[in-house]
Amino acid sequence: MERLEIEKKVRQVIVSEVGEKAKDLTLQTSLRKDLAVDSYSALQILFELEEAFSITIPDEAIKEAETPNDIIGYLEKRLTETGTSERAPAGGSA
Amino acid sequence: MVTGLGVVAPNGIGVSHFWKANIEGRSGVRTIQTFDLTEHDSRIAAEVDPFDAVAALGPTGAKRMDRFAQFGVVAAREALIDAGIRESPEILEKAGIFIGSGLGGMIFYEKQIEAVRAAGYRRTNPSSVPRIMPNAPAGEISVAFGIRGPNIAISTACSSSGHAIGQAMEAIRAGRVNVCVAGGTEAPLCPLTFSAFEALRVMSRNNENPAGASRPFDCDRDGFVMGEGAGMLVLENEEHARKRGAKIYAEVAGYGASGSAYHMVMPQPDGNDAYDSMNLSLMDARVPASQVDYINAHGTATKQNDTAEAMAIQRLFHGQERKLSISATKSMIGHLVGAAGAVEALVTCLVLQEGIIPPTINLENPDPGCGSFDYTPLKAKERQIQTAISNSFGFGGNNTSLVFQKLA
Image 1 (cartoon, rainbow over the protein chains, first blue to last red):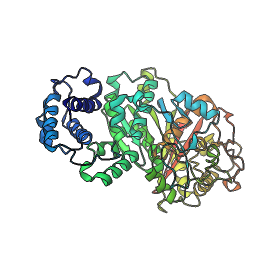
Image 2 (cartoon, helix red, strand yellow):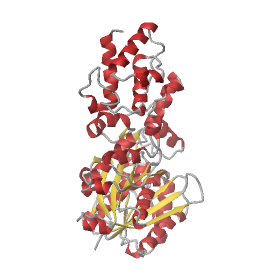
Image 3 (tube, chains in turn purple, red):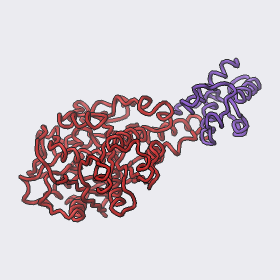
Image 4 (cartoon, chains in turn purple, brown):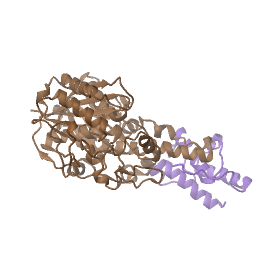
């Protein structure tokens, strides 16, 4: 998957979780300090990234990520390693 | 004292739209639009449409909450604005919340079951618990408006929000809080909940005539029509309300609650349990039965409920057949389950304030087994009301009655 495509999906997931606070989102925005992403929001972001990319992401990966750029870097690496999706996307989750 | 009202109902969102629809006798029942009806014998419901959750709550608010919590927050906001305390953090931080819901976040719950069945339990959404739990609306209302007093959810099936208002009134009487948001919310329209009630054979199958399907106290009734929505009241200590010059709709003068000790899903056939809850509410209000002018009946349009409720009314109000007015809001909006009591309490407050009794629509052929009371058939009636009762009865054998009085 192209980096730009990953970036687009990551932005969508973050914006959908934090809303208005993400209006000036850059790749270097601090998830915790600037967007007030707490441990609960982080779980929701992790869950939605898993849905969006059809992979399983360990909790540590999201805990270690400070910025969208970190998440994108992680996903780029993961998606290159696996090449394709690990699993079919879950249906019906809202 | 009731100092604020808010409502999301199938025949109107917001108190003014809702009240207009009620006095015009407009039904909110239609053929279900929101899910596939192939496997259902009952195909009608009172749906809230249009309801734009994103416009009302923003994209993150809409996403975070299941539909019943969305309704609850929207109705609570209207009630707080109506009471004039939406922007009064010093009042809100000491206020309480008592919210009824009979079922919880069933729409999301069913979707989650489908998702994990398809993809495994590891795919459970981390927001499942705070979306499904019956106190999600109470929690969301607390967060949305900065309300920091007692935060309580009550789940007693179809009497949930009657109990919530009663318990809120008692908290105010006891001096624990001066202000409460009290009411109920429910969004039960998903295949799982719908089929669960269908399996009990308690729902109308009058699919060809949705607006005519909910027929409380009518010979041709064939069960209740399920509905969704929310009703919220701001209750307030009288001195507190007067000091800040609040508009007062009515006084919650009495609260009665009884258990049936009879059956999980059937009322006592002679209406003894309903009699008890009405009688206890009048005793609590210190008002004789002879002073009651109006009853907003539970009136579900099931044979069992209407007959038993009518027998209870007959026993308690014997000799007042010509004086007492009764009407059933469910004829227009169906049965809002845990929100029914709150929306009907709200109607009762408006009856007291406006001097108009909304009709029991579809009451074309009154059931002689329901006595010779004036059930306000078909058309609204102008009448000044001083004292009124709102009844709510629920599965599990829960009965609650609230007495409302107009201030002199």
